[in-house]
Amino acid sequence: MAEVKADALVVGGGLAGIVTALQLLRAGQRVALVDRDTPERFGGLALWAFGGMALVGTPLQARARIQDTPEQALADWLRFGELDAEDHWPLQWARHYVEHSRVQVYDWLLGHGLKFMPAVQLVERGRHGEGNSVPRYHIVWGTSRYLTRTLITALLAADQGRLTRLHRHRVTALEMQNGRLTGALAVHEDSGAEVQLRADTVVLAMGGINGSHEEARRNWPKDRSLPASMLNGAHPFADGRMHHWAAEHAGAQITHAGEMWNYAAGIAHPFPHFPGHGLSLIPAKSALWLDHRGRRIGPEPLVTGFDTHWLCQQVAALPRPWTWQLMNWRIAAKEFAISGAEHNQRIRDRQFLRFLKETLLGNHRLLRQMQRQSTDFLVADSLGELARKMNQRTASLDIDPAVLQATADAFDAQFSHGTPNDDVQVRRILQARAWGPDRLRTSQPAPLQKPGSGPFIAIHTQLITRKSLGGLQTDLQSRALDARGAPIAGLYCVGEAAGFGGGGASGKRSLEGTFLPGCILTAQAAARSISEGA
Image (tube, rainbow, N blue to C red; front, side):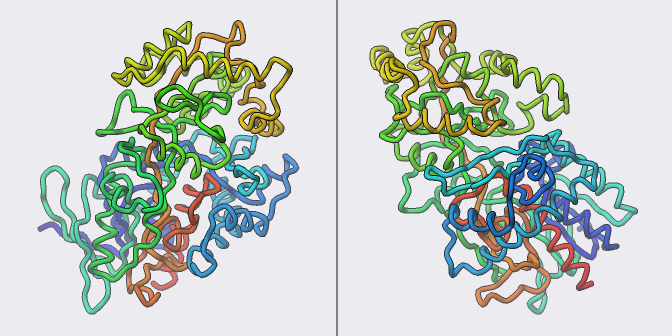
């Protein structure tokens, strides 16, 4: 059996694992990093993510005259996340995040040559204003893919012969002696060859648990509806097996496993990387969100950007596991977007002038691309033709063309005497448009059948799993804790594996954009603790 020796073993090659390894190398440690994926996909989900970050008190906020403080951010975080006042470590990590995101994330990334887009976004406002009270959502210029590759470059530059990378390897067991971690056993995913990993310190950075739908369903809260089917927006490798191993054999504690940050509007990936692979849409605020029969969901209409957690619960409770987004081309050109690096080419490739052009004139390129590639993206010149295509997509007769027409007519009739301010969806659209950056990406309310706005578009959407909000419980040094709350000697946990800190720092809801910074903050804490201990 091959043997690898190091000072620290990092299990997982996502953002949290990369930052941990980078900081340890800079502190002079010998590091072994084990990653289940191929070298080309080194970086985990961060390689495919959009790159939005909730940051507090940045120069970009100050430039836009956004007054924000850690105290205000923490109040928003605790109110929106509904954290339990007795849940000590999640509360500590929430406070740590808002107090240190400026220096340890924003400034740290600037120090690596990364930049943020100038406009700070206002997301997750809450249905009644209980979410973000000010804009905090910063977007990495180049998306998370450029961020990840930049940090990988920094990692390789810090190597100096002290880094061992094992791609396509999976850690199957941790090894302990006298109550302390001494290493791990890994197996090659393809050949089955085993490797003995010797290290005094092990950092678990293997991601969350709900890339496995079996695991997600097992942990689904009993008081919430569970849809019959879902898409996978995480990764099958995030299967929770190492969480359970650490709990059963090392005494670690899995907390808040039922809390997840899923999304309500996913479509099947046209070129899936694995079975059930989905893409998470950023749904158009101006689209009518319909049930499987083509009726507007209510009594409170569904509108994105206010409470994603609530949206997911409403969609999951419907009689069929799919919904429809109904809009016209005018709306879609301005508002339709897909989360992630893959379909945000202008930001990903840092093409500012082309990005500006598509923002101002409409992203017709993406619409035509999805019309060609996606069976979930339907376009028709009439609502009757659209109804036929919708039924064809679901192999049903669920959509009565007369019902679809009546749905559109009822919405449009509200505009007969001006803008219908008594419609909740219209009010929220107007609220969003009050913030300049949102006005650029949100249409002025108008009838769906307004002449010249066609053709019509219907998008077949399903709930899509994404991130785990729970995980292994950790302290502020990212040390894994046992049932007594004591650190397990030599065992650390970072990123999504740790519920982004403390085993559930976000509570029930995220302010959105807390995940990439959560990976960076927990990784830095672990690296500091390990280096100081050494």
